Image (cartoon, rainbow, N blue to C red; front, side, top):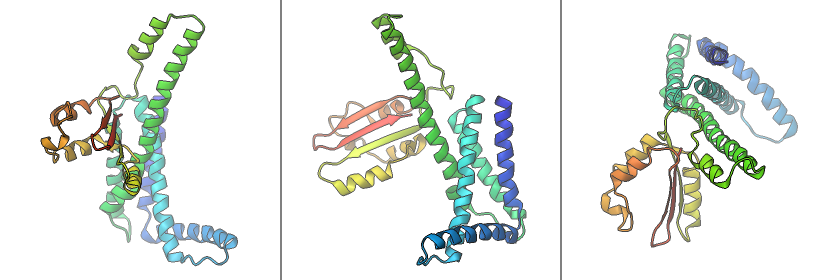
Length: 262
């Protein structure tokens, strides 16, 4: 299964590279045909639409590129799981593929590399799909373990004490053979600031890579943490490098901050 997954991910990657080897004229002709087909359907459903084919063509081209890398992220995630790769290595593979994809376009007629495309339309969709699978897998693994333990407890196969130890001390197999955290999930609530809270929910909808969180912590002064904070800045940074940390902060002025590491 490991080899099959690796072959499948490699084949999908080569297919993406083959699209980049096509000339600008060939690539544009293919995507324009798809754009016209979809726009004809939209026009049949909404005759009064004012969508310009030129603008719609750009949207379709970028959407197709993002979809390619979204699928690649899924494929390489499962390959990394089977080969016991850390999540950071999977992200490194995604970044390497995106960079190679743009380099290949240097050798295609009427095409060229773009750093914006590599990051926005390649690497970010790859990262988003793998993050979603990471969250889903962690949640599923925890639910399966807890459900099995509770089932044995209900059947009187184990004692309550044994169930407690199994749930909280049993070492279950992880996707990545490390206890280090890779992402931080933030939730911030400011009292009587509905607009700001909605903006913060959108801003922190996806988990933040741990290195970005550490970078911004560098600019927070020690005295800004407040007198009630039991940890200093270095201790907070050390703490969030471990998986499974859940920190709830309630300030005297009513702000609430929840920090989770995954």
